[in-house]
Length: 326
Ligand SMILES: COc1ccc(NC(=O)[C@H](C)Nc2nc3c(cnn3-c3ccccc3C)c(=O)[nH]2)cc1
Image (cartoon, rainbow, N blue to C red; front, side):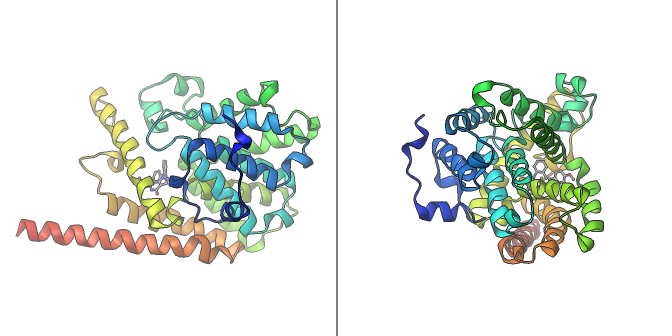
């Protein structure tokens, strides 16, 4: 895999900083080069004395540790990292947060779903898997993703943090653990409530404020598919439902509890998505947009359009059902 083979044009570099970047147009090998561009264009290599070859080894090792499953695969990792990269530029966070905090957010996005098995925490706990046993049912997946990330960083040839001071290393390790563990959706309301309290009085010199913002930025990037053009976003919902249906099929076979919005016999794509957008995405994106008003056009308006799109689809499918019944 010759990473520097793909010459990245200036136009692609600019496009990479926007939320309308279309992941479906790119090969995974090209995505690895684009991830390398994100680290270089944020000046992480000069700031943290990262050798290009070590970065390439790190990115390739991360790529190898994502599994070939319908949703939580390397393409999802790329989308989340690219959205984080775009948000960093759109919000001009480079002028408000230290570069080390930007490194924490981008690397957390990159590593946040490492070695995801395609079965969520509810399954891990109900099926009493090795992960649930190892992590005592406490965010087993997110603990695993983070442990795999630091397992990769423990390899000298992949350790992009090797030339940092021990102070810097401790700060990055602590920040990545907090940000990756924050992606457990079971903690969604806990984290959003905290952000709602501090947002009106946000202070960029306050450590606690910055910590909650970094968690929110990783969370927003993680579930941001609907902020992309519909042609990019809609296939992601099909991939997600494929993974969810695969899990609920297994749960039925094993006589384990089945989550309704994962059951192929119960879930309707439009109604589950309208609920998700209405009750999860819009409140989260609205709160972040209060702190960074420029995000209104970039992520809030596309999500409102997506709500319209799925609401129309829901109405159409209801009408169709009523006519076929009649
Ligand atoms: C509070 O915990 C929750 C809340 C909602 C959901 N998921 C949903 O409501 C449904 C399945 N829709 C949905 N879920 C999504 C999306 C993006 N990520 N994502 C997702 C994937 C895996 C685990 C959790 C979530 C939210 C998306 O666009 N739609 C899953 C967990």
